[in-house]
Image (tube, rainbow, N blue to C red; front, top):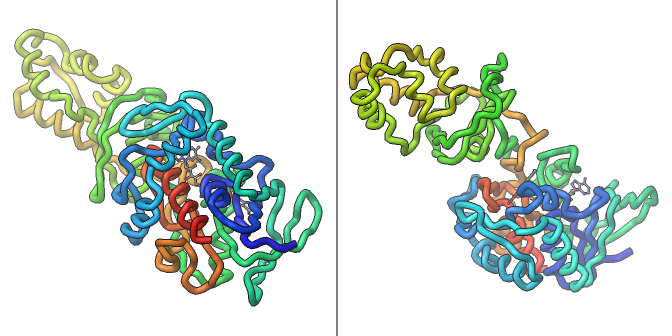
Length: 389
Ligand code: FDA
């Protein structure tokens, strides 16, 4: 069977690409449904893009690489598509756009777009063999137990990264990259909770508060959540993408709270109260209980000099923690690293050394922050390849 283009992966990038390609297009996926990550994303409401998406929201060895595709297919282009399908949406926070209804609306929209473009979709289909031919590629595909030989001029790798193997992530794009001698940037889990040894934060599981997490590279101020195994919440997921094993993360538990001034004022009115009691008016009680031991907090408020109060606030605003690790690919929202952007044209996403071979989406070494940026990259890179084909 002959196709002009075969797209490996019916995820966000693959479906967008298929809807933009001309010629006879086949999308292959080993899963039983397309766009599974879209379906479960954003708590079932899909944070499909971000109003403020720009190159500074992405990690890559080449921070400029994403600019071209993102400029030619912006967040507003995707919003226009969503509007055209009558899908209602809202901004949740920080420019993050979510469906009012269900993420399934986004999957249906992309399937309709693919249909309109005449693309074929084979589910429960895995690639068993891949060869370069003179005019393109020859693939052996196992489709629901049947072996089928297919050929194509263009092959698009849209099979994502390694995150959440339970949902079908395989890292096959990296294997194909090795087969064709494409350079790879080491992969690691991103947007992932931190773990700590010895159940350090177990008694705090469920405690949430606004916090700012920083390291030598960057800083994020959003919610922090203590879990049975460590730390999660948006601020943690964000900084995890900038963290390497063994490094310290500085946690500010009192950002923009003016705690020092507040404690000084309260010292005038309620100096006879215990410091911990007063602190519990400003921070979750269970956390104060934990910090009491950790920072040796004791005594009446009246007994605290300005120097002592300042020292306490300094401790609380720069709590140095060294995670023992992360939850790994099991729960990571994305995979950092991947196929080196040096190997690709930023305009078309075609590889420079293998004509007709394209790479899009998460398989590329372009990883977004939490907040709709990863989908925007999937749409933009899928559009770039699709319109080039
Ligand atoms: P994607 O993973 O979407 O698709 C890859 C496809 O390839 C899958 O259908 C898979 O089955 C298929 N495949 C893999 N290996 C194969 C093989 N060997 N043979 C055949 N097919 C194969 N981002 C965002 O912007 N907003 C959000 O709200 C969220 N929320 C979110 C929640 C959760 C729980 C996760 C895990 C991730 C997110 N993300 C997100 C990230 C986002 O889902 C991700 O970046 C994109 O889906 C990447 O799109 P791709 O098309 O590159 O890969």
